[in-house]
Length: 501
Image (tube, rainbow, N blue to C red; front, side, top):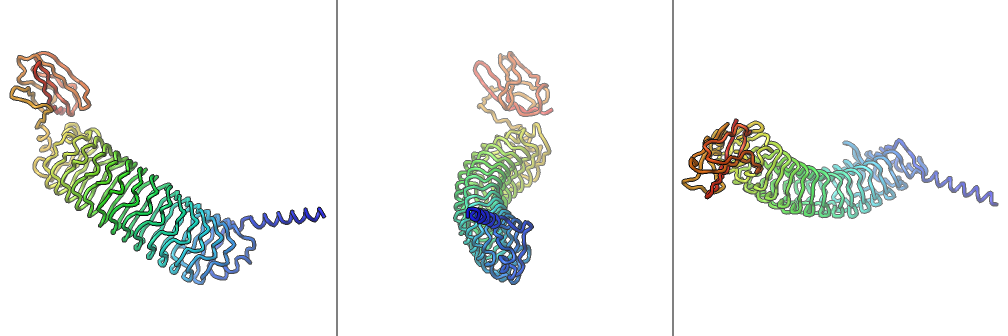
């Protein structure tokens, strides 16, 4: 009797192992309804498919024969390439499936109306593609999905109106890519997503108004790209984003007029670009942004009249390119900017009259200088530009602007008009020439005992002399801008000095 019990127990264990072990390591393709109907007969006890599964075929109308599947360790392709399942209306039959180890690709199913049948899938080991399913209106059917290891792509679904159905999705380890869904108006359905491992791409969704649905995302570990969402008026939904690791591109929008939702953004690790946003009046909403790791490009924003909102920006890790903004009148909001790391380019801004606001950029951080085709621009002789022209670090192009800024020579001449830090009177000292090369000669100091100091823009004293002084040897000074300070018993004067070798 004991022997019989042991045999039966062993038989049960053997059956359990056989029942749970995987099958079809090379995967399987279903191209007809009979293949699906006969699956359980052809592959008894096959609950875990080790390879990939592809489903496409004109006759496939239901997936009921696959109801025993619990796991697919490879990809699951429901439709592929240009081939679809024209008779498939829903995905009932996959109700026992809880895990797809590779990508889940739902592609080109022209009459698919619902994702019901996927309600037990809790995680996907690869990318989730929902692409070119013209009758799909929402994502109901993914109620148990919590984790996507790869990207999440919703693309070219002509009638999808909402992403509702992803109630429990909390983590996308790759890119969130929503593009070319013409009836999608918001991103509601993504409210539970709190972890995003890479970028956000929102591209050519012509009726998307805002980003509501993304409120739980605080960090974007990649780039943020918005492109050609023609109805988008604001970025609501991004209100809690604090940092973005790479670039931010907000380009080609007809209705975008409000950046207030970016009010908590402090750090951008890469480039920041605003291009072809036709109703954007200013940069209000970016007040907490202090640094940009890459370039700042502000190009062809038709009614942009001011850069207010960028008032806290102190450093740019690439070039500064401000161009073709037909209504831009001033750059005063950039007054806190002290360094860039590349080219300074200002061109085709027809109403811009002055470069005031760029005064504090360190000239040694500028590599090339381009100021051209700004028809109203007459004030280019701000401190940063004057300092750079005295000791250039690259190519210079200044042309096609208003008088006073129509050539390098005009700007240098204007730079020679000295603005004293302290008021001067008729008896104050002067020196010449300025710009100078090897010597400067003092006036109005013939009988006075004075102290002369010359120091650089960092405040370091480079030269100091005492006595009755008529001239000062500056042959050891390199090209650049300096401050000459004169002290007497009763007076204290400062002047700027340009040294050109």
